[in-house]
Each structure stands twice: as structure tokens, then as C-alpha cells.
Amino acid sequence: MKVSASRVLLIEDDQKMLEVLGTLLQDDQVTLDNAPHTAAVPALLQQHSYDLILLDLGLPDANGFELLRQLKDNPQTQPIPVIVMTAWN
Image (cartoon, rainbow, N blue to C red; front, side):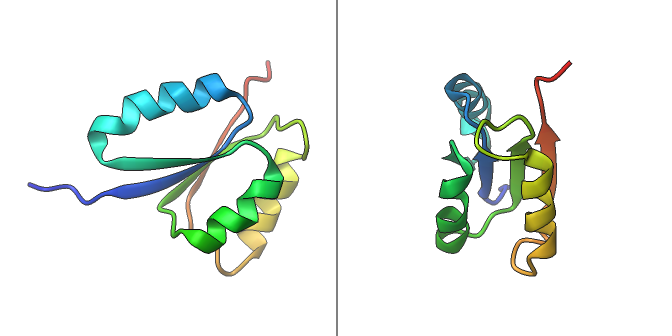
């Protein structure tokens, strides 16, 4: 059975997380795009269609909860599933 390719947007400022996830997903036909800061998010969402968004809540330039609210309030991005991640204790 052939699995179709997926595209995931990682909103994460930690380069190590991008490297780890990229390595883990490379054999699963997943294209992983990274937005290292929130200013990069709108352009990526305009350029590509995403199957999933992985969102770091602890972004240095934005409140992750606020960004999540914006994503879910936008009709274009509302249907995209979002998994939130954090390194907070």
C-alpha cells in the first residue's frame, strides 16, 4: 500500500527539534517546513497546503496560545490539525 506524501509545518525556534523531527520523518514521505519565528508563518501558509501544524508554545517572539487562536480563527487554517508542544515544566 502506497502512503501519500504529507506536508507538516513546524513552528519552532529550536534548530535541534527541526533536525530531530526531520530525521524521524524523512522515511515516512513527510515534508517538514520550519517557521523559526512567527513572522515566517503567513508566507509559508500562503505558499503551501499543510496536513498538520506542530506548534511550540514557548516561542521567543510570540505567545503560542495567541498564535494558536489566530490559526483557529482563520477560515483558511482552521481545519488544519494542530499539535502543541512545549519544553515548559
